[in-house]
Length: 96
Image (cartoon, rainbow, N blue to C red; front, side, top):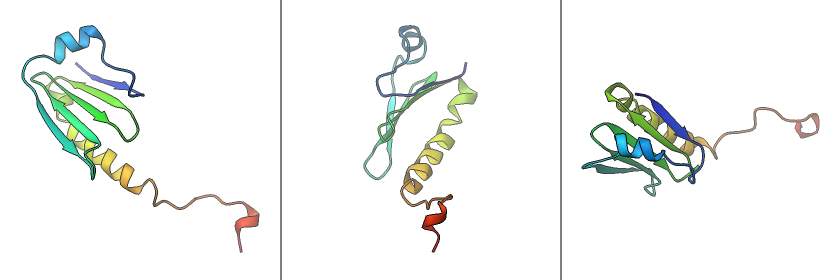
C-alpha cells in the first residue's frame, strides 16, 4: 500500500491501480471555498483531486487513507495563504 502523487491534472492512476483500488461504491467530499478539492473515498483507497494546482494523490491502504484529511487541511491552508505572504528577500534598491 502507499501514496501515489500525480503532478498535473492530466496524470492519473494506472489502469492496474484503478482496477485494484478504485472500484465499487464511493463517496465524494468537497472542500475549499469553491469546492476545488475533491476526495473520492473507496473501500481500499482515497483519491484526492486538487483543481487549484492540478495535482492528484491516491492514498491506498488503511494507514495511508487516514493521512488524507491532514493533506486536505495542509492544502487548504497553503492555498489560503499563497497570496498573503510577503517577499522574504528584497534587493537593496527595495529597502527605503
